[in-house]
Length: 275
Image (tube, helix red, strand yellow):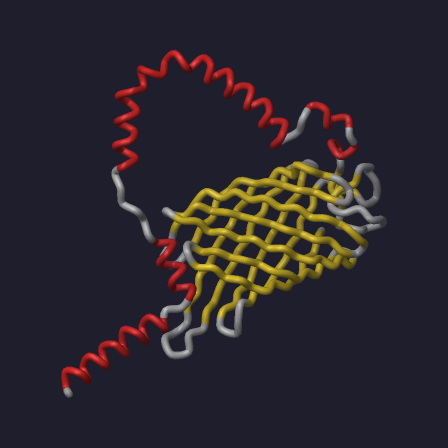
């Protein structure tokens, strides 16, 4: 009986450890993994041996690159014909719905326009009673088209019998507001993400976002960020319904996080102020 008892105890301890591992701990371990492989070095050496075979195609390749660059510039920044439209010179508003149905941009320079705008916000995210977090966000708009965003996400997970876990994600994004109309605007951005804790890594990040001012005082907002950490990604997507009251914005909606191989589906609610 003693061997059976020992086996049962060992099984119980292993099973208990598996159940005790929280989602944040799993996410940290997933993001911390690095694939050790020499394939990239072998591939580069192989390319060096065969590079002479491609010399004749360089001229044609350069031409395609130049054409692609012109098309890409028009898509990413502004096509030549767009300069004729009012949205090309739209100004930043002091805050949405100041004196009219305008959102983040105004075609005319007036009392509601500004050269620079800062929006500070805080949002709580909750998946369940034991897993929750908070966003602190600073968003800056200037020179009509340019922006910068800093986002700090702190997550906590309560584990009753095995201690608590926490994880923080810092996102820094330089943004270009590609579409700027009075009712709709859209941006793309490039930057970096840092994940602290056991991960302790910095990775390249890109982001996309848009906001539709469909009926005063409401707007619908969506944002997506993806960061490359080690051999996996950190994805963040949210969709928010915003209620604008003077300089304040009250928001609520859904936020999905994917940290490595672990998914988090959360409810999000918060408040922001523009000045």
